[in-house]
Length: 86
Image (cartoon, rainbow, N blue to C red; front, side, top):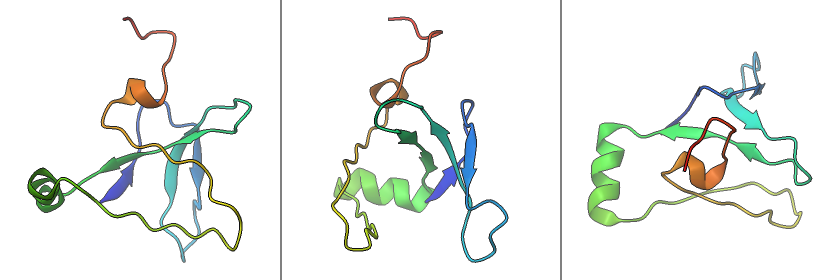
């Protein structure tokens, strides 16, 4: 699984930092400082997800409270833009 660039990317976290993989993202700029990323699964990961129906997530919070996470396969569930039509 790899974070991928998408049309609305406006920030890239950890760019040019050898110890990290860069993270292309859309920073919405709302009251919650929402960050949106898009991930591409390998063929094997897609097959496993199809048959298992679940995936795992690991997150480092450095002893701070968890922040809300939301996952979707539909971009419009995560963010919309003016050019979207219902």
